Image 1 (tube, helix red, strand yellow):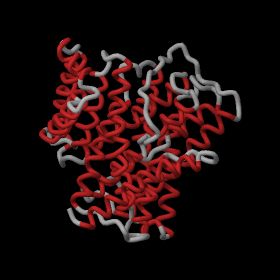
Image 2 (cartoon, helix red, strand yellow):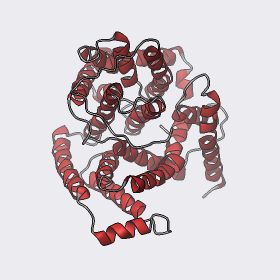
Image 3 (cartoon, helix red, strand yellow):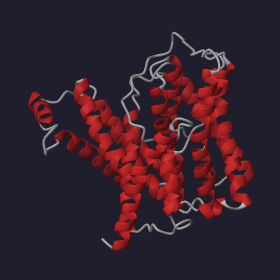
Length: 411
């Protein structure tokens, strides 16, 4: 390991430590997700401002590992067993409408190509991990309105990951779809096996090693993660889909466990992911962000257009489809703003698109900047709309409560 690598890692660590401190200091005036600060600090130490950090193979590998863990945690957040009924149906229909709208709008400007599909998919994402701390801190989790945000966010994370795995893995979409179906069957089998109660002896061993150097529970989870990533690679799919599927499988495997044990395991996963690897990915994404592309008039205009596109493409269908369930305009607009808040998966999709040569760097930078602005602005406006009137939470008898895992303010 070279001196340059160690210095860059030191800068990344400083940025990771500074991020929650900055968020806490600014919390009196504005709620800023930690990943925005991590991106900004990455830009600050990167080649376009201070010229301090240099991304080499080691830093890039750590960043890729952080991305894999991020997708694992995104999959773990989603509990499809509890997301059902009308909110989930509307979320699926809304995402399909967003996809059609996004592809259509981008195609009108650039023509239809692989780049059109990648940009269109980026516009259909929702930052579920970013919204969870905001909803939890305001006691909205488990309410009918909070359930709708969860459903919209879950589909806004799951569907784009599946789609991007098909689009960017091969030139033959039919071949990719067949492999995706086979992988889905394998994942379903793995999920079924995960739901089977372990032997009493294994259960006792897992519990006994929770606070020892063996840490069997965490090692089993890492085994599932690496296995699913390897299977996705062998099936010629994007390895991020394997990470995402691993999170879902582990979530199902944790269901039979006691609440106390689940909390302990989740705390350890949070420490590995949000305490170590995931901040590396976002800081490195900031280092790689082409700030020069945003300093031009074209770059600023593209960023502004992408912000509007997120609101129209992602928020528009949500606003329209929930008109029966949420008759209050403020509530529908708040839900649309929450759904249009997107950054983590935009970073993921643009990173993949740039690496595969589908996106140019200026487009990458403008999309990421738009995503950062969306999670800075949209949730703030949504919460103000909910506070300014009596929230009509859409208490439909068809709504199903959602139980969520505890999560730190990392995404």
